Image 1 (cartoon, one colour):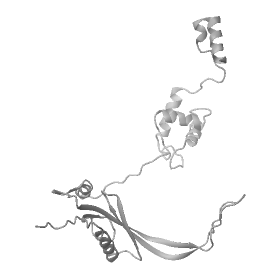
Image 2 (cartoon, helix red, strand yellow):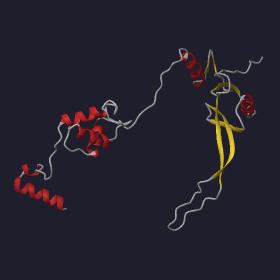
Image 3 (cartoon, helix red, strand yellow):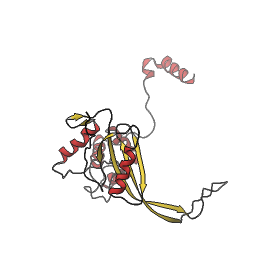
Image 4 (cartoon, rainbow, N blue to C red):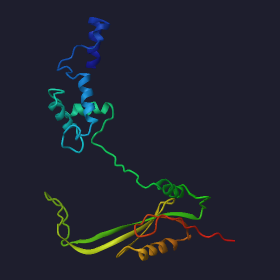
Length: 233
């Protein structure tokens, strides 16, 4: 009600001009469009190109570098963050990528991607055919702490003993049914053809018995292959 009364009083005293914004107190904007553009341009450079020993920029480091370069006499990290947000510039984020050095990458990738789209070459996959992607994780350490963990209490955080005993290492082999989102896994004392064939036996023993198209990514097995069930009749 106080707000309505205030606006009504301004309109009564001054008419429509009284509804316009009044001059505000406080410090006016001191940054120019050129300064804003210079900071954004700096954010789009690698720190190494600017001679700064950083792997990536943060808003705080950009503000410091802008002051060092005399782009502005003073600048806060929040102001830099607001400027970068205008153009969705996020120099603290990164995406990894790699050059493809294999000249036969396209036909090899096509062979695998066709399986993921249920296109097994010239003949599309049938309803009873599965695409299974297999891989392994080696040297999984089995560790047991020497003392039990103590639960938290009043003015006391949970206590976890640092020392542990080693129980050896295991390898985890897994097969992923691509189109049905099922995982078949097992642990073995080591990797190799024999443990991998045990995984294949485990997959093939499921009901209903799959007629798999196997895309294997295991380092101890053959390159990606397609194995189809022989036609009957």
